Image: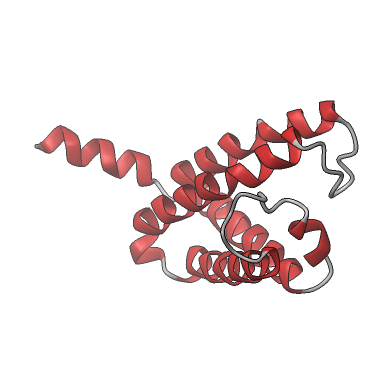
Length: 134
């Protein structure tokens, strides 16, 4: 039951974060887009917001495919990590993170999100059991 609540909570978190990409926090998210990406920052923010909404809804609705979705969400969190690193390296103020210390601490939350996705969806557990059988 705890894992289900954690999975739905993560889904809600992702969906709401995605919605905020499209509106209220759009500028804040633009500040996190690495300058080396060959795409317009606004496009990256909008696309990642739509992806977050979809992933959030999938976490909430598709229980049958929860472990696959868990891996996709974990990979998504890894894929967006360079934005957090860019914010730290370039000293960009966004989301109230206005010091190097705060931006550095923020970096340690991304692995927690990856672990949350893998644990709550039992993706890691399923992977290990499949490996043990082969």
